[in-house]
Image (tube, rainbow over all chains, first blue to last red; front, side, top):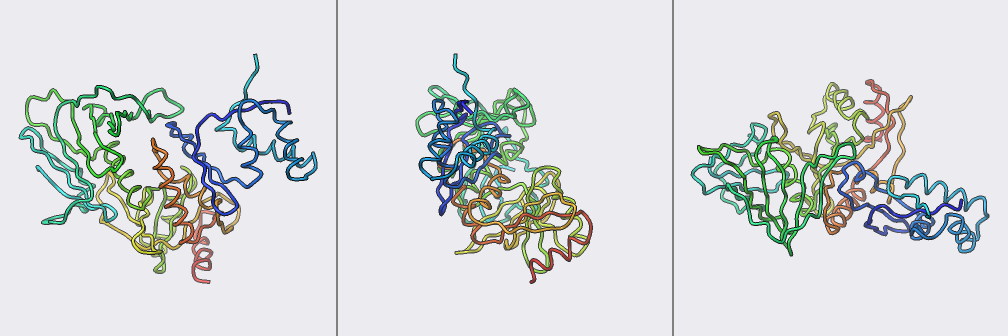
Length: 94
Length: 291
């Protein structure tokens, strides 16, 4: 849970009602098919996938901002990382 | 032929050349899309010539490729507000298509050492479908990998990844009396305040021009029993968008596509359709579209 991820692609984000559409700007034809619908928590996590913030810190911010329990926050972040795997990458510190 | 017009999804393209050594020869798949004795102004003007344009100052901005291959399918270069798409016709002639972000005019240069007459189809793959894609996007439409049918006076499309059963389900419905608009590639384009039509596009085979109003969009999933889950909001927009052709080198094109897809999903019913590939899916869908 102390892993760090970064976005692989610039994305176009569109708010629609209470949710968001996220489309990667890429010339890889396979990746173009990865278009995501995110809820508010998903967007909260996406904004913190910045190549600097460890996953456990993102979970702590969710606990703080959304008054959720630790188990739910960790589960949300892990599910998000799995779902977004095609357009994010783990950063390994030297 | 020195000039011709075609109508694809109610977008009129005029293709012409002034060069005596060039003959334009559209593929037979375009035959029923040709406009004969038509004087209306085209939406898209395409001029064809031989030679190579001056690309000084152009830099690459998009390289369409597959993850599985290093080979480039086509590239787009940019200089100020001008773009150049570079590809090949049938892996032979190098082609440079010059355009701007309005996509209303294309100047196609064919680099050829041909000394005699050169017979060419400017709409050959991949350039033709790319011109169609961008022209459709800026005209309140999208191109989509889907199968479209007219059934009980309703327009239905079936979307899904390759192998999800688009052709299979179309055949099942065809046997039950449905008209197949196309089982692979469609244009969905707005024609009225809240009306989107399904259009077929020219293919490698000859087919008549078809269109019908879009009422239902089904996202196919293999299943052990027929099932339907209605989608709404961003879930339907994301699913629909993923089936669209989207070689979007410019953020404005992505935004335009999301706008159009959002409107389509607010206009037509969208559902995940788990289906077993036999004729029971007919009565199952009939109950959905004629409750």
